[in-house]
Amino acid sequence: MSFDTVNLREGRMKTSRTIIPFRKTAACPASATLLSFQCQNLPADTAAQVHEHLEACDFCCAEVRLLAHHEVGTVSFKVPEIPMNLRILAESILGAVDKRAGKTD
Image (cartoon, rainbow, N blue to C red):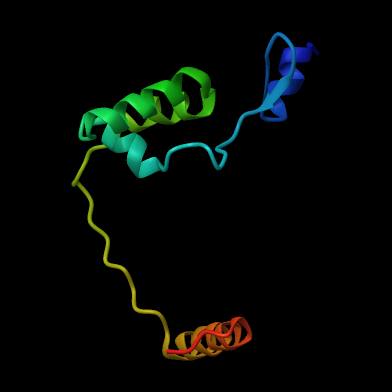
């Protein structure tokens, strides 16, 4: 088995000096931004930033190629309501965090 095969199985890409993980990072644009870039719906300055990022990020390049197959507006989803018991739990936890941080409404 070759070195390249092992790296591809592990989700890593080989470069001349280092092995770079093939994944989205904090520096990567959101998928919605990449979709807007693909559809040419971004302001020129933002599009330039995304283009510059794509020159260096293989993962986002692959995502943009995948998004080229996305048909905008063909499927709509209804966001379900959060169950009341889960809402109460979340609000109590968030309220406790806010109190510890000294925040009040």
